[in-house]
Length: 41
Image (cartoon, rainbow, N blue to C red; front, side, top):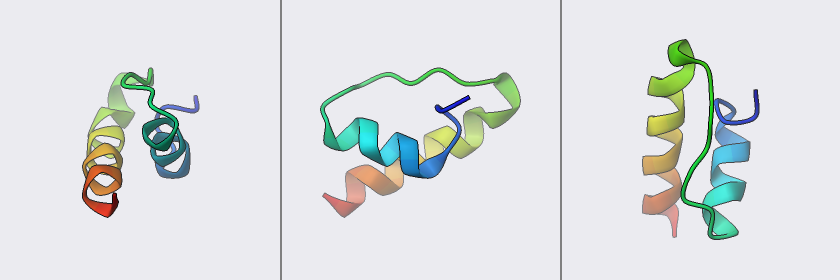
């Protein structure tokens, strides 16, 4: 369940991955983390 962890999402973004997988209930967290990672860079 790495895709719902904000630190993992940021790591994936920094390494060029454009997809993470997570449980349905963690999708909002993953989307927020992805947006934050994009804004940070």
